[in-house]
Amino acid sequence: MIELIQGDITKQEIDAIANAANSHLAGGGGVDGAIHWAGGPTIMQELKEKYKGCPTGSAVITGAGNLKAQYVIHAVGPRWKDGKHNEPKLLASAYQTSLELAQKHKCQTIAFPSISTGIYGYPVEEGAKIALQTVAQFLKENPVFTTVRFVLFDEKTYQAYQKVYQPST
Ligand code: AR6
Image (cartoon, rainbow, N blue to C red; front, side, top):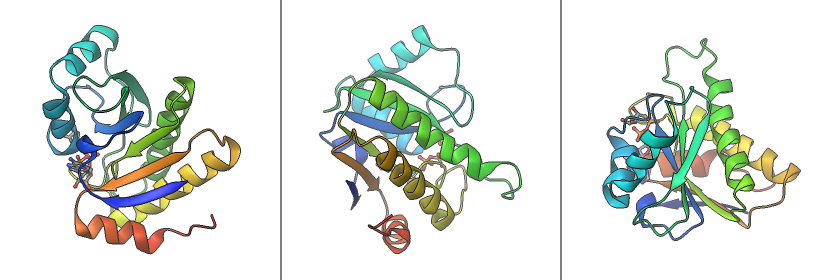
């Protein structure tokens, strides 16, 4: 089932935590900074050892260091330009790839932040629609997760997801 909560994703007890990363997998601000800070240095060490970046619209997986999770899935959403540069497709693909990776690693629960709607400037309601549609469709086709939890940091983002969410879909 899909859950929407307002909170801090680094505090979740869950199989996999998704991160809103960049294609260099270089760390940064926002939720990425918070995850590396809370998870400790082993996450970045593993990223550097195993991967040479990650294309926009895709994701890679590491252990979760000190977080109360098994894995961190580093998903790279698009930077918002004007909506005519494949942004919706790339955002959907970032969620889709993350779900596929979590499934492959036998996760039953996963938490997502609102990918791309912070520093990358994706309009929040548009981003929420893509996020919820992609997850709902995936769950219909692959009923492998008991929980997909969106952990929305700020009130505005939480409200936007609540507005867009239709539990029947
Ligand atoms: N828990 C949950 N959500 C959070 C947290 C947290 N602890 N902290 C922030 N958010 P952003 P992006 C929310 O900017 O837009 C980084 O530098 C935040 O309020 O983290 O995909 C990366 O390295 C917003 O709603 O990610 C990339 O370079 C959402 O997470 C770039 O930012 C996403 O905001 C990616 O930008």
